[in-house]
Amino acid sequence: MKHVHNTEVKLEEPTERGVKDVKLRWLISKKDGAENFAMRLFEMEPEGHTPLHQHDWEHEVFILEGNGTIKNKTNEEIFRGGDVIFVPSMEWHQFVNTGKEKLKFLCLIPNKE
Amino acid sequence: MKHVHNTEVKLEEPTERGVKDVKLRWLISKKDGAENFAMRLFEMEPEGHTPLHQHDWEHEVFILEGNGTIKNKTNEEIFRGGDVIFVPSMEWHQFVNTGKEKLKFLCLIPNKE
Image 1 (cartoon, rainbow over the protein chains, first blue to last red):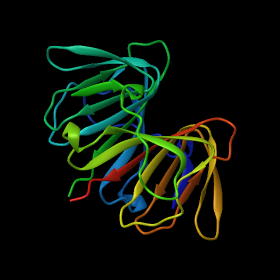
Image 2: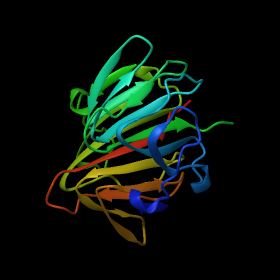
Image 3: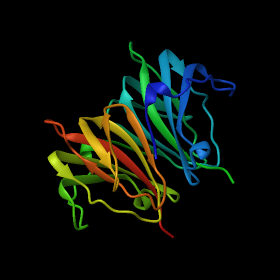
Image 4: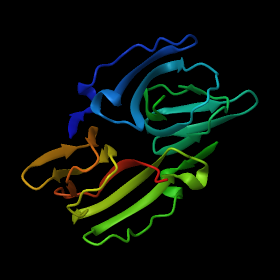
């Protein structure tokens, strides 16, 4: 069993282009023996965002704190703490912190082969 | 995309024996098109618990609110909001609400074939 407080897990800079003021913690991953999927915690400053992108894996997201919007190429939806978002594979998406506080959310992904 | 507040998802009674004062919401599952893994939110009253059991799939857990202990046959560990717990496949485990408030946690599991 692995048991830690999320803040004990290293806060890393994402390497992807188009990310602004975002850091993440890999809370549970293959390194822990998790073969099927990984749990990451994202921390995003106000006005920070992820890229508007698409990829061939899904996201399962739970908003922990803060407010923001999720956008695709034509629409956007406001979210808040306690919201649940499922982004299917190949769907365009971008997370933006539109609030005044730090935005924190869990984003789980399947492991790549 | 699916986007809801967690409280909009039906609160269900688990059917497993050995569960006490626990309800759960299937936030993201195969019904939503999530092929690889499912996100459930557990709500447990004070003194409630899951069974002490083992099974051939893992748990990825994030404690949202409340306090409790996770037990196996010989040990127990206290947890609190913001804690992360990975229970590997076949490891004995039981979640107990030892606090005075409702315990809420996310527990994600791989989908069965």
